[in-house]
Image (cartoon, rainbow, N blue to C red; front, side, top):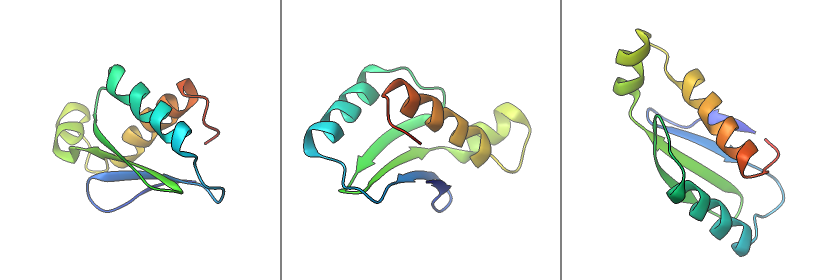
Length: 85
């Protein structure tokens, strides 16, 4: 499940715990990747939370609801990392 989590976070959450090795692989992929709006990744046992700047997205797309655009970027990243979202 992917959802907006507050004003500047998008969270991917799953029931099954994400292993330490999988979190490390995803974090490494995040650091090595190029992102349009995603600024930071935080992980827990069940979640991946992405930080973004809503103002940057709002200005770039002339919108007041930026999370849908960022959710699509998160989905694309998770797809590249082979995480079923």
